[in-house]
Image (cartoon, rainbow, N blue to C red; front, side, top):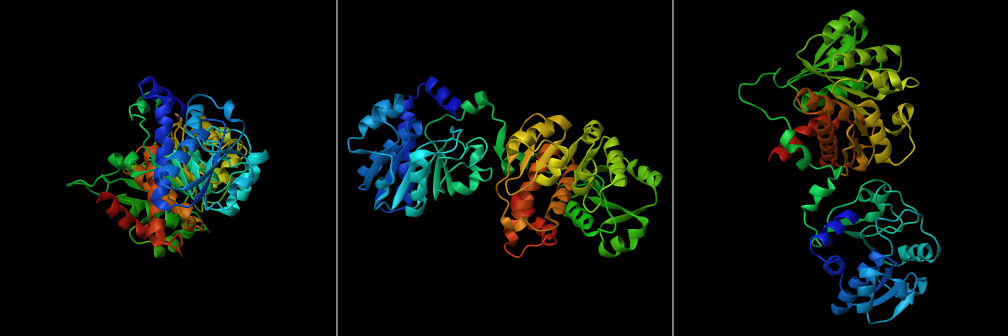
Length: 472
Protein backbone atom coordinates (compact mmCIF):
# COMPACT_ATOMS: atom_id res chain seq x y z
CA UNK A 1 0.00 0.00 0.00
CA UNK A 2 2.96 2.29 0.62
CA UNK A 3 4.05 1.69 -2.96
CA UNK A 4 0.48 2.23 -4.21
CA UNK A 5 0.42 5.61 -2.45
CA UNK A 6 3.83 6.53 -3.89
CA UNK A 7 2.77 5.66 -7.43
CA UNK A 8 -0.48 7.57 -7.02
CA UNK A 9 1.36 10.68 -5.85
CA UNK A 10 3.84 10.30 -8.71
CA UNK A 11 0.83 10.20 -11.04
CA UNK A 12 -0.31 13.63 -9.87
CA UNK A 13 -2.56 13.09 -6.85
CA UNK A 14 -1.06 14.72 -3.78
CA UNK A 15 -0.62 12.91 -0.48
CA UNK A 16 -2.69 15.64 1.18
CA UNK A 17 -5.62 14.79 -1.11
CA UNK A 18 -5.23 11.06 -0.53
CA UNK A 19 -5.33 11.60 3.24
CA UNK A 20 -8.34 13.88 2.94
CA UNK A 21 -10.14 11.26 0.86
CA UNK A 22 -9.23 8.52 3.32
CA UNK A 23 -10.47 10.38 6.38
CA UNK A 24 -13.60 11.56 4.61
CA UNK A 25 -14.44 7.99 3.60
CA UNK A 26 -14.09 6.80 7.19
CA UNK A 27 -16.35 9.60 8.41
CA UNK A 28 -18.86 8.67 5.73
CA UNK A 29 -18.92 5.02 6.80
CA UNK A 30 -19.39 6.10 10.42
CA UNK A 31 -22.32 8.41 9.70
CA UNK A 32 -23.96 5.69 7.61
CA UNK A 33 -24.02 3.39 10.65
CA UNK A 34 -24.41 5.59 13.72
CA UNK A 35 -26.41 8.67 14.62
CA UNK A 36 -24.50 11.71 15.96
CA UNK A 37 -22.98 11.03 19.39
CA UNK A 38 -19.91 11.78 21.47
CA UNK A 39 -16.83 10.33 19.77
CA UNK A 40 -13.20 10.08 20.83
CA UNK A 41 -10.63 10.04 18.03
CA UNK A 42 -7.29 8.53 19.04
CA UNK A 43 -4.53 9.77 16.72
CA UNK A 44 -1.06 8.34 16.31
CA UNK A 45 2.11 10.15 15.24
CA UNK A 46 2.04 9.05 11.60
CA UNK A 47 -0.25 8.98 8.59
CA UNK A 48 -2.90 6.94 10.42
CA UNK A 49 -3.13 9.79 12.91
CA UNK A 50 -3.43 12.24 10.02
CA UNK A 51 -6.43 10.28 8.77
CA UNK A 52 -7.88 10.60 12.26
CA UNK A 53 -7.69 14.40 12.20
CA UNK A 54 -9.61 14.39 8.90
CA UNK A 55 -12.27 12.09 10.40
CA UNK A 56 -12.63 14.39 13.42
CA UNK A 57 -13.04 17.47 11.24
CA UNK A 58 -15.71 15.85 9.05
CA UNK A 59 -17.65 14.54 12.04
CA UNK A 60 -17.69 17.99 13.65
CA UNK A 61 -18.98 19.44 10.40
CA UNK A 62 -21.75 16.81 10.52
CA UNK A 63 -22.75 17.94 14.02
CA UNK A 64 -20.98 15.36 16.18
CA UNK A 65 -19.25 16.07 19.51
CA UNK A 66 -15.62 15.13 19.02
CA UNK A 67 -12.60 14.90 21.31
CA UNK A 68 -9.16 14.25 19.85
CA UNK A 69 -6.21 12.69 21.65
CA UNK A 70 -2.71 12.58 20.13
CA UNK A 71 0.18 10.24 20.91
CA UNK A 72 3.17 12.57 21.14
CA UNK A 73 3.54 16.26 20.42
CA UNK A 74 1.64 18.09 17.71
CA UNK A 75 4.80 19.78 16.41
CA UNK A 76 6.39 16.36 15.90
CA UNK A 77 3.90 15.49 13.16
CA UNK A 78 5.26 15.58 9.63
CA UNK A 79 4.05 15.90 6.06
CA UNK A 80 0.40 15.30 5.29
CA UNK A 81 -0.38 14.41 8.91
CA UNK A 82 0.97 17.78 10.08
CA UNK A 83 -1.07 19.55 7.40
CA UNK A 84 -4.35 17.99 8.48
CA UNK A 85 -3.57 18.46 12.17
CA UNK A 86 -3.25 22.19 11.49
CA UNK A 87 -6.75 22.17 10.00
CA UNK A 88 -8.08 20.87 13.33
CA UNK A 89 -8.59 24.10 15.27
CA UNK A 90 -10.00 22.58 18.44
CA UNK A 91 -8.29 21.16 21.50
CA UNK A 92 -5.88 18.24 21.18
CA UNK A 93 -5.58 16.21 24.37
CA UNK A 94 -2.73 13.92 25.38
CA UNK A 95 -3.22 10.20 24.83
CA UNK A 96 -4.92 8.98 28.01
CA UNK A 97 -8.06 7.20 29.08
CA UNK A 98 -9.52 10.56 30.16
CA UNK A 99 -10.44 11.32 26.54
CA UNK A 100 -12.84 8.37 26.60
CA UNK A 101 -15.10 9.88 29.25
CA UNK A 102 -18.69 9.87 27.97
CA UNK A 103 -17.55 8.58 24.54
CA UNK A 104 -20.22 6.55 22.72
CA UNK A 105 -17.86 5.73 19.82
CA UNK A 106 -14.07 5.50 19.53
CA UNK A 107 -12.02 5.97 16.38
CA UNK A 108 -8.72 4.08 16.42
CA UNK A 109 -6.36 6.14 14.26
CA UNK A 110 -3.21 5.30 16.20
CA UNK A 111 -1.25 2.85 14.04
CA UNK A 112 -2.02 1.37 10.63
CA UNK A 113 -0.96 -1.76 8.80
CA UNK A 114 2.74 -0.91 8.91
CA UNK A 115 3.16 -1.54 12.64
CA UNK A 116 5.72 -4.24 13.45
CA UNK A 117 5.82 -4.27 17.26
CA UNK A 118 3.53 -4.87 20.20
CA UNK A 119 1.50 -2.01 21.63
CA UNK A 120 2.70 -0.67 24.94
CA UNK A 121 2.50 2.36 27.23
CA UNK A 122 -0.44 4.76 27.01
CA UNK A 123 -1.68 3.36 23.68
CA UNK A 124 -2.12 -0.13 25.09
CA UNK A 125 -3.79 1.28 28.21
CA UNK A 126 -6.18 3.54 26.32
CA UNK A 127 -7.20 0.87 23.81
CA UNK A 128 -7.83 -1.60 26.64
CA UNK A 129 -10.20 0.91 28.24
CA UNK A 130 -11.72 1.82 24.86
CA UNK A 131 -12.65 -1.81 24.23
CA UNK A 132 -14.78 -1.71 27.39
CA UNK A 133 -16.22 1.75 26.71
CA UNK A 134 -17.81 1.91 23.27
CA UNK A 135 -17.71 0.45 19.76
CA UNK A 136 -14.40 1.03 17.99
CA UNK A 137 -13.92 2.07 14.38
CA UNK A 138 -10.41 1.23 13.17
CA UNK A 139 -8.76 3.18 10.38
CA UNK A 140 -6.91 0.86 7.99
CA UNK A 141 -6.52 -1.97 10.54
CA UNK A 142 -6.95 -2.20 14.32
CA UNK A 143 -3.83 -0.86 16.04
CA UNK A 144 -1.71 -3.80 17.12
CA UNK A 145 -2.68 -6.06 14.22
CA UNK A 146 0.21 -6.67 11.84
CA UNK A 147 -0.93 -5.85 8.32
CA UNK A 148 1.17 -8.54 6.62
CA UNK A 149 0.68 -11.45 9.00
CA UNK A 150 -2.51 -10.95 11.02
CA UNK A 151 -0.54 -11.29 14.26
CA UNK A 152 -2.28 -9.36 17.05
CA UNK A 153 -0.10 -7.74 19.70
CA UNK A 154 -2.28 -5.78 22.09
CA UNK A 155 -5.06 -4.92 19.64
CA UNK A 156 -8.60 -4.02 20.68
CA UNK A 157 -11.48 -5.52 18.73
CA UNK A 158 -13.15 -3.14 16.31
CA UNK A 159 -16.79 -3.14 15.29
CA UNK A 160 -15.82 -1.65 11.92
CA UNK A 161 -12.53 -1.40 10.04
CA UNK A 162 -12.29 0.97 7.10
CA UNK A 163 -9.33 0.36 4.81
CA UNK A 164 -8.32 1.79 1.46
CA UNK A 165 -7.88 0.52 -2.11
CA UNK A 166 -7.37 -3.15 -1.21
CA UNK A 167 -7.45 -5.32 1.91
CA UNK A 168 -4.21 -6.36 3.58
CA UNK A 169 -3.34 -9.93 4.49
CA UNK A 170 -3.88 -9.06 8.15
CA UNK A 171 -7.55 -8.38 7.49
CA UNK A 172 -8.03 -12.05 6.57
CA UNK A 173 -5.42 -14.05 8.45
CA UNK A 174 -6.15 -15.10 12.01
CA UNK A 175 -6.11 -13.84 14.64
CA UNK A 176 -6.14 -10.42 12.97
CA UNK A 177 -9.39 -11.06 11.15
CA UNK A 178 -11.23 -11.60 14.42
CA UNK A 179 -10.18 -8.10 15.59
CA UNK A 180 -11.39 -6.28 12.47
CA UNK A 181 -15.18 -6.62 12.74
CA UNK A 182 -16.88 -5.53 9.53
CA UNK A 183 -14.25 -4.63 6.93
CA UNK A 184 -15.06 -1.97 4.34
CA UNK A 185 -12.69 -1.11 1.50
CA UNK A 186 -13.09 2.45 0.22
CA UNK A 187 -11.88 4.26 -2.88
CA UNK A 188 -9.58 7.17 -2.04
CA UNK A 189 -8.42 7.92 -5.58
CA UNK A 190 -5.75 5.25 -6.04
CA UNK A 191 -5.93 4.19 -9.71
CA UNK A 192 -6.39 0.48 -10.31
CA UNK A 193 -3.56 0.68 -12.86
CA UNK A 194 -0.98 0.79 -10.05
CA UNK A 195 -1.68 -2.92 -9.49
CA UNK A 196 0.08 -3.66 -12.76
CA UNK A 197 3.24 -2.06 -11.40
CA UNK A 198 2.95 -3.53 -7.91
CA UNK A 199 2.13 -7.03 -9.26
CA UNK A 200 0.60 -8.34 -6.01
CA UNK A 201 1.16 -11.99 -5.16
CA UNK A 202 -1.54 -12.37 -2.51
CA UNK A 203 -5.28 -12.52 -3.17
CA UNK A 204 -8.55 -13.05 -1.34
CA UNK A 205 -10.30 -16.20 -2.49
CA UNK A 206 -13.26 -15.44 -4.70
CA UNK A 207 -14.82 -17.10 -7.77
CA UNK A 208 -13.53 -14.24 -9.92
CA UNK A 209 -10.05 -15.74 -9.53
CA UNK A 210 -10.90 -19.15 -10.96
CA UNK A 211 -14.37 -19.03 -12.54
CA UNK A 212 -13.00 -18.83 -16.10
CA UNK A 213 -10.96 -22.01 -15.50
CA UNK A 214 -13.80 -23.93 -13.88
CA UNK A 215 -14.82 -27.11 -15.76
CA UNK A 216 -17.69 -26.63 -18.18
CA UNK A 217 -20.04 -29.32 -19.46
CA UNK A 218 -19.88 -29.84 -23.21
CA UNK A 219 -22.31 -31.41 -25.65
CA UNK A 220 -21.02 -34.73 -26.89
CA UNK A 221 -18.93 -35.41 -23.82
CA UNK A 222 -18.76 -38.69 -21.92
CA UNK A 223 -17.69 -39.89 -18.51
CA UNK A 224 -14.05 -40.08 -19.55
CA UNK A 225 -13.93 -36.63 -21.13
CA UNK A 226 -15.33 -35.30 -17.85
CA UNK A 227 -12.39 -36.86 -16.04
CA UNK A 228 -11.65 -40.14 -14.25
CA UNK A 229 -10.63 -39.74 -10.59
CA UNK A 230 -9.06 -42.43 -8.40
CA UNK A 231 -8.91 -42.39 -4.60
CA UNK A 232 -7.27 -44.93 -2.32
CA UNK A 233 -9.66 -46.37 0.24
CA UNK A 234 -8.13 -47.45 3.52
CA UNK A 235 -9.09 -50.20 5.92
CA UNK A 236 -10.37 -50.48 8.64
CA UNK A 237 -11.05 -46.69 8.56
CA UNK A 238 -13.34 -46.57 5.54
CA UNK A 239 -15.47 -43.49 6.08
CA UNK A 240 -12.88 -40.85 5.18
CA UNK A 241 -12.14 -42.22 1.71
CA UNK A 242 -15.84 -42.71 0.99
CA UNK A 243 -16.45 -39.04 1.80
CA UNK A 244 -13.61 -38.02 -0.50
CA UNK A 245 -14.78 -40.23 -3.38
CA UNK A 246 -18.37 -38.97 -3.17
CA UNK A 247 -17.10 -35.40 -3.14
CA UNK A 248 -14.99 -35.97 -6.25
CA UNK A 249 -18.05 -37.32 -8.03
CA UNK A 250 -20.34 -34.54 -6.80
CA UNK A 251 -17.99 -31.82 -8.01
CA UNK A 252 -18.24 -33.22 -11.52
CA UNK A 253 -15.72 -35.99 -12.17
CA UNK A 254 -17.29 -38.16 -14.85
CA UNK A 255 -16.02 -41.38 -13.30
CA UNK A 256 -14.73 -41.96 -9.79
CA UNK A 257 -12.98 -45.13 -8.70
CA UNK A 258 -11.94 -46.08 -5.21
CA UNK A 259 -9.18 -48.66 -4.92
CA UNK A 260 -9.43 -50.73 -1.73
CA UNK A 261 -7.77 -53.70 -0.04
CA UNK A 262 -9.58 -56.94 -0.90
CA UNK A 263 -10.65 -57.34 2.74
CA UNK A 264 -12.59 -54.07 2.53
CA UNK A 265 -14.41 -54.73 -0.74
CA UNK A 266 -17.78 -55.60 0.77
CA UNK A 267 -17.80 -52.58 3.07
CA UNK A 268 -17.11 -50.13 0.26
CA UNK A 269 -19.29 -51.85 -2.31
CA UNK A 270 -22.26 -51.84 0.06
CA UNK A 271 -21.89 -48.16 0.90
CA UNK A 272 -21.19 -46.79 -2.60
CA UNK A 273 -23.30 -47.08 -5.71
CA UNK A 274 -22.13 -44.68 -8.44
CA UNK A 275 -18.50 -45.04 -7.30
CA UNK A 276 -16.55 -47.96 -8.81
CA UNK A 277 -14.94 -50.05 -6.07
CA UNK A 278 -11.77 -51.75 -7.32
CA UNK A 279 -10.19 -54.41 -5.08
CA UNK A 280 -6.39 -54.38 -4.94
CA UNK A 281 -4.62 -57.61 -4.03
CA UNK A 282 -0.99 -56.48 -4.05
CA UNK A 283 1.48 -53.85 -5.25
CA UNK A 284 1.58 -55.26 -8.78
CA UNK A 285 -2.19 -55.09 -9.01
CA UNK A 286 -2.07 -51.47 -7.82
CA UNK A 287 0.61 -50.58 -10.37
CA UNK A 288 -1.52 -52.07 -13.15
CA UNK A 289 -4.44 -49.93 -12.06
CA UNK A 290 -2.31 -46.76 -12.08
CA UNK A 291 -1.14 -47.58 -15.60
CA UNK A 292 -4.62 -46.79 -16.95
CA UNK A 293 -3.90 -43.42 -18.57
CA UNK A 294 -7.59 -42.56 -18.61
CA UNK A 295 -7.26 -41.83 -14.89
CA UNK A 296 -6.38 -38.14 -14.67
CA UNK A 297 -6.21 -37.55 -10.94
CA UNK A 298 -5.22 -39.46 -7.80
CA UNK A 299 -5.85 -39.02 -4.08
CA UNK A 300 -4.39 -40.85 -1.13
CA UNK A 301 -4.51 -40.09 2.57
CA UNK A 302 -8.02 -40.08 4.02
CA UNK A 303 -8.24 -43.16 6.24
CA UNK A 304 -5.22 -44.69 4.51
CA UNK A 305 -3.28 -45.43 7.67
CA UNK A 306 0.22 -44.20 8.48
CA UNK A 307 3.07 -46.41 7.36
CA UNK A 308 5.21 -47.85 4.62
CA UNK A 309 2.28 -49.18 2.55
CA UNK A 310 0.65 -45.79 2.32
CA UNK A 311 3.99 -44.18 1.55
CA UNK A 312 4.66 -46.67 -1.25
CA UNK A 313 1.23 -46.11 -2.80
CA UNK A 314 1.71 -42.34 -2.61
CA UNK A 315 5.07 -42.64 -4.35
CA UNK A 316 3.49 -44.83 -7.02
CA UNK A 317 0.81 -42.22 -7.68
CA UNK A 318 3.37 -39.43 -7.83
CA UNK A 319 5.47 -41.55 -10.15
CA UNK A 320 2.78 -41.41 -12.84
CA UNK A 321 3.41 -37.68 -13.27
CA UNK A 322 -0.34 -37.13 -13.23
CA UNK A 323 -2.23 -34.84 -10.87
CA UNK A 324 -2.07 -36.14 -7.30
CA UNK A 325 -3.51 -35.00 -3.97
CA UNK A 326 -1.82 -36.07 -0.74
CA UNK A 327 -3.74 -35.57 2.48
CA UNK A 328 -3.81 -36.75 6.09
CA UNK A 329 -2.10 -40.13 6.60
CA UNK A 330 -0.25 -39.91 3.29
CA UNK A 331 1.51 -36.78 4.50
CA UNK A 332 2.31 -38.19 7.92
CA UNK A 333 3.77 -41.29 6.28
CA UNK A 334 6.68 -39.12 5.11
CA UNK A 335 7.45 -37.81 8.58
CA UNK A 336 11.18 -38.10 9.19
CA UNK A 337 12.02 -38.32 5.48
CA UNK A 338 10.41 -35.27 3.86
CA UNK A 339 13.17 -35.17 1.26
CA UNK A 340 11.78 -38.39 -0.22
CA UNK A 341 8.46 -36.66 -0.81
CA UNK A 342 10.16 -33.56 -2.22
CA UNK A 343 12.10 -35.66 -4.73
CA UNK A 344 9.04 -37.68 -5.77
CA UNK A 345 6.91 -34.66 -6.74
CA UNK A 346 7.48 -34.08 -10.43
CA UNK A 347 3.99 -33.52 -11.80
CA UNK A 348 0.91 -31.53 -10.70
CA UNK A 349 0.50 -32.02 -6.97
CA UNK A 350 -1.57 -30.61 -4.10
CA UNK A 351 -0.74 -31.19 -0.44
CA UNK A 352 -3.54 -30.44 2.03
CA UNK A 353 -2.15 -30.46 5.59
CA UNK A 354 -3.62 -29.00 8.74
CA UNK A 355 -1.15 -27.34 11.11
CA UNK A 356 -0.19 -30.59 12.86
CA UNK A 357 0.51 -32.45 9.62
CA UNK A 358 2.37 -29.43 8.26
CA UNK A 359 4.74 -29.40 11.25
CA UNK A 360 5.64 -33.05 10.60
CA UNK A 361 7.05 -32.19 7.17
CA UNK A 362 7.93 -28.51 7.15
CA UNK A 363 9.38 -25.75 9.32
CA UNK A 364 6.47 -24.50 11.44
CA UNK A 365 8.18 -21.19 12.24
CA UNK A 366 6.93 -17.93 10.74
CA UNK A 367 3.53 -16.61 9.84
CA UNK A 368 1.08 -18.69 7.85
CA UNK A 369 1.90 -17.18 4.46
CA UNK A 370 5.64 -17.27 5.04
CA UNK A 371 5.83 -20.93 6.01
CA UNK A 372 3.36 -22.04 3.34
CA UNK A 373 5.37 -20.25 0.66
CA UNK A 374 8.56 -21.91 1.88
CA UNK A 375 6.89 -25.34 1.77
CA UNK A 376 5.49 -24.81 -1.73
CA UNK A 377 8.83 -23.58 -3.00
CA UNK A 378 10.66 -26.55 -1.47
CA UNK A 379 8.32 -29.25 -2.76
CA UNK A 380 7.11 -27.79 -6.04
CA UNK A 381 3.55 -28.60 -4.93
CA UNK A 382 0.57 -26.40 -4.20
CA UNK A 383 0.15 -26.18 -0.44
CA UNK A 384 -3.30 -25.91 1.11
CA UNK A 385 -2.64 -25.09 4.77
CA UNK A 386 -6.06 -25.63 6.28
CA UNK A 387 -7.85 -23.70 9.00
CA UNK A 388 -10.46 -20.99 9.40
CA UNK A 389 -8.06 -18.87 7.35
CA UNK A 390 -6.94 -21.53 4.86
CA UNK A 391 -4.16 -20.38 2.55
CA UNK A 392 -3.47 -21.81 -0.89
CA UNK A 393 0.09 -21.23 -2.10
CA UNK A 394 1.75 -22.01 -5.43
CA UNK A 395 5.47 -22.82 -5.84
CA UNK A 396 6.02 -19.43 -7.52
CA UNK A 397 4.84 -17.62 -4.38
CA UNK A 398 1.31 -16.70 -5.40
CA UNK A 399 -1.01 -17.04 -2.43
CA UNK A 400 -4.77 -17.01 -1.95
CA UNK A 401 -6.32 -16.48 1.49
CA UNK A 402 -9.76 -17.96 2.07
CA UNK A 403 -12.21 -16.16 4.34
CA UNK A 404 -15.60 -17.79 3.71
CA UNK A 405 -15.25 -20.88 5.91
CA UNK A 406 -17.74 -20.92 8.80
CA UNK A 407 -16.81 -22.42 12.19
CA UNK A 408 -19.15 -25.37 11.50
CA UNK A 409 -16.43 -26.86 9.26
CA UNK A 410 -14.52 -27.80 12.40
CA UNK A 411 -16.00 -31.29 12.29
CA UNK A 412 -14.54 -34.73 11.63
CA UNK A 413 -14.34 -35.61 7.96
CA UNK A 414 -14.66 -32.12 6.50
CA UNK A 415 -11.02 -32.20 5.39
CA UNK A 416 -11.64 -35.49 3.57
CA UNK A 417 -14.45 -33.83 1.66
CA UNK A 418 -12.14 -30.98 0.72
CA UNK A 419 -9.45 -33.30 -0.62
CA UNK A 420 -12.10 -35.11 -2.68
CA UNK A 421 -13.28 -31.83 -4.21
CA UNK A 422 -9.70 -30.97 -5.15
CA UNK A 423 -9.33 -34.43 -6.73
CA UNK A 424 -12.52 -34.04 -8.75
CA UNK A 425 -11.47 -30.66 -10.13
CA UNK A 426 -7.98 -31.88 -11.00
CA UNK A 427 -9.45 -34.85 -12.85
CA UNK A 428 -11.52 -32.40 -14.89
CA UNK A 429 -8.41 -30.53 -15.98
CA UNK A 430 -8.08 -27.58 -13.61
CA UNK A 431 -4.53 -26.57 -12.72
CA UNK A 432 -3.54 -27.40 -9.14
CA UNK A 433 -3.45 -23.82 -7.83
CA UNK A 434 -6.87 -22.84 -9.17
CA UNK A 435 -8.39 -26.25 -8.41
CA UNK A 436 -7.31 -25.94 -4.79
CA UNK A 437 -8.60 -22.38 -4.51
CA UNK A 438 -11.95 -23.31 -6.05
CA UNK A 439 -12.29 -26.37 -3.84
CA UNK A 440 -11.62 -24.43 -0.65
CA UNK A 441 -14.15 -21.74 -1.54
CA UNK A 442 -16.85 -24.22 -2.63
CA UNK A 443 -16.26 -26.25 0.54
CA UNK A 444 -16.79 -23.14 2.67
CA UNK A 445 -19.85 -22.02 0.75
CA UNK A 446 -21.47 -25.45 1.10
CA UNK A 447 -21.00 -25.27 4.86
CA UNK A 448 -22.43 -21.75 4.92
CA UNK A 449 -25.55 -22.92 3.12
CA UNK A 450 -26.19 -25.70 5.63
CA UNK A 451 -25.67 -23.71 8.82
CA UNK A 452 -25.60 -25.15 12.35
CA UNK A 453 -25.59 -28.89 12.89
CA UNK A 454 -23.33 -29.60 9.92
CA UNK A 455 -21.54 -32.95 9.71
CA UNK A 456 -19.15 -33.95 6.96
CA UNK A 457 -21.67 -36.27 5.29
CA UNK A 458 -23.84 -33.23 4.51
CA UNK A 459 -21.21 -31.47 2.43
CA UNK A 460 -21.07 -33.52 -0.81
CA UNK A 461 -24.81 -33.26 -1.34
CA UNK A 462 -24.70 -29.48 -0.88
CA UNK A 463 -22.29 -29.07 -3.78
CA UNK A 464 -24.95 -29.15 -6.55
CA UNK A 465 -26.68 -26.14 -5.00
CA UNK A 466 -23.38 -24.28 -4.67
CA UNK A 467 -22.59 -25.07 -8.29
CA UNK A 468 -26.01 -23.85 -9.46
CA UNK A 469 -25.45 -20.55 -7.69
CA UNK A 470 -21.95 -20.32 -9.15
CA UNK A 471 -23.11 -20.99 -12.70
CA UNK A 472 -26.12 -18.69 -12.44
